[in-house]
Length: 230
Length: 230
DNA sequence: ACCTGAACACCGTTCAAGT
DNA sequence: ACCTGAACACCGTTCAAGT
Image 1 (cartoon, rainbow over the protein chains, first blue to last red):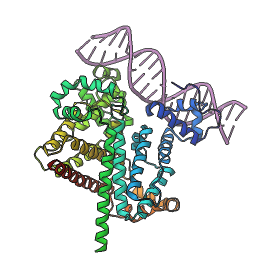
Image 2 (tube, each protein chain N blue to C red; image 1 turned 90 degrees about the vertical axis):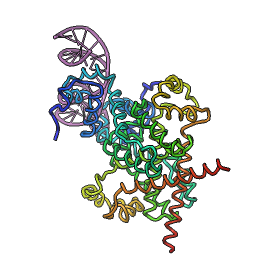
Image 3 (cartoon, each protein chain N blue to C red; image 1 turned 180 degrees about the vertical axis):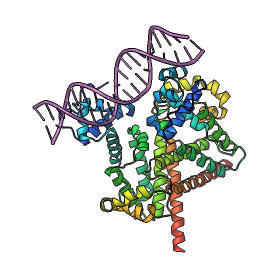
Image 4 (cartoon, chains in turn brown, green, orange, red; image 1 turned 45 degrees about the horizontal axis):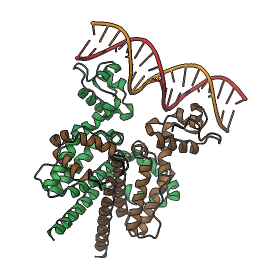
């Protein structure tokens, strides 16, 4: 399981290759397992050599975040905006859950890279040509991004893994059910009546939220157009 | 500025006191500056002594997250649900921006503490007695929590500090304005026409989002009641 | 131009030992 | 019961030195 053979060796070290290797390491072992020393070994080089290509570990982390944003396709210009933004939200969510370390990293990074800026630029462009004013575009992006990032945050911190195999986690939960129903009766009721039922998967909440937000934006957009027309 | 005198010394060490001191240290110097050794010094004790009261550093981090949730007041039973949930959202946001490390920590912690569970229990209780079904309560909490946490995440990672003194940050931005307007024209336009205008503060976007979500929930709630009545 | 060894100032944690 | 010193296996980073 543990790849002791440097996968990224051979080819010369560059900042880009270092960032890619760091993303692979973080995907495999979590962000807390990523060290400059391990990253160097993966690249077939000593730790100190990295500093020739990269300013610091923070520089690597910045690159990783930008790499994540680079993976997200932009909504295609000309598409109907509601369904395009729905698909886009799903794409962002899936990228963030594919790289669970990214959402925590965003918090500390304050210098966005080219891919991040390009991504923002593309979404703004899409909304403007869909009839959004600048202010409405800002509203829409802030609202949707906050929701999608926040949802990914909640989703990755759930004790359960994928929708299917809740078995291990639920066993623990059920064993604590007695204590819980005394101390936290409403939480226990929600668990029993809803969350622990066979059909339930937390991921399904995403569709409800995105749908509600898009519907609300459509209403706000129509109201803004109306007030302009008058 | 740097408090070299142990503020929490004197009184005996307990898990609770260790967690409180850790929160103060993280508030002051950021989560990455928190070490077991510094925490011990703050408590007037050697690092190894902490392990008598606390299982591990992760145990301290779990306690810190729970401490943050313990600071959030619950919506008062009996209040009108929309304004109560609006106030509650604002309360959560203000706690999370007061402890900027909390939002990043949530990501890694998977074992909620008593305050966290109690908080969830209280919100569920409030929604149920406000007429929400169990499924609608789950929808509302997932949606609102995701949005509020996500907004706090965005807000703390902004390069700008408080609404007033954007001067230092904007200076940088303006200096890069030329490069940006070439590479990212729409982003540059949004900055120029909206974000850099005197009146703008990102925090104001919060009200728009919460309002839209609450409005959407009210509509969904009415629709659900309607379908039951039929 | 690219890489390295040695070194510095840190980490979290264990464990046997002190009072 | 509560605290400690010494020690282990790690960190990120600098710097002079190698090819």
